[in-house]
Length: 200
Image 1 (cartoon, rainbow, N blue to C red):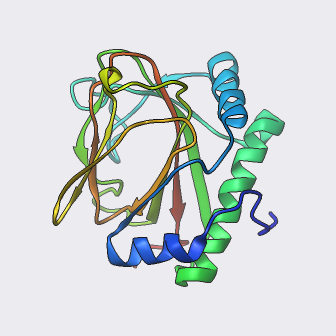
Image 2 (image 1 turned 60 degrees about the vertical axis):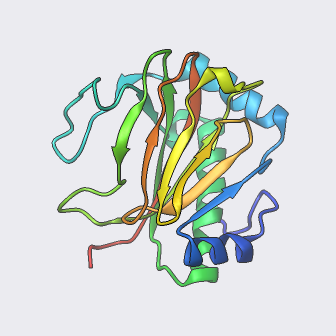
Image 3 (image 1 turned 120 degrees about the horizontal axis):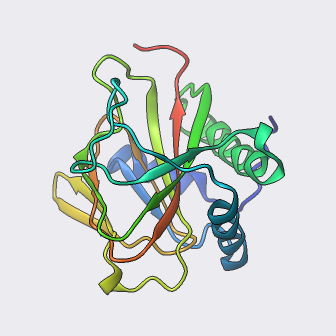
């Protein structure tokens, strides 16, 4: 895939935030129109399945309540475009932070009202291939009463990020614990993981 970034992101600032804090919060990385297009696409075309937990891939709604649709370029132009954008971010992170990221995996995520995700990290006990996590939100006109914030647990406290369309969060997969507060309306996002080729 090409390494030409399709969206204008400041990767030096992203790299600095990841190095010093472990998390970078980016607003308006895509247009409202593009976020709406992606939202409409996943509502219409996603083949939702209950999300699993850990390396055993078991579902537990008490811990994690979302449904997912894994992205593949074989599913058409929209998913191919998203994966191309994510691969451009992978390339830029390699150039900025020398992370040697080899691949990216991603899915659409849907949290129905009343669901959330308990505090966790994005790595498995015996699989440390995920290096950087990314979440891109697709929700239009999100309000505080809708809940569903991302809670990011840092050394100096908890940072809350509302899931507003066009906002993205990047963080170090192995270090940053996070959770999704229970939502009161349908919540949609793209979750992605930039991976190294082998475990250290």
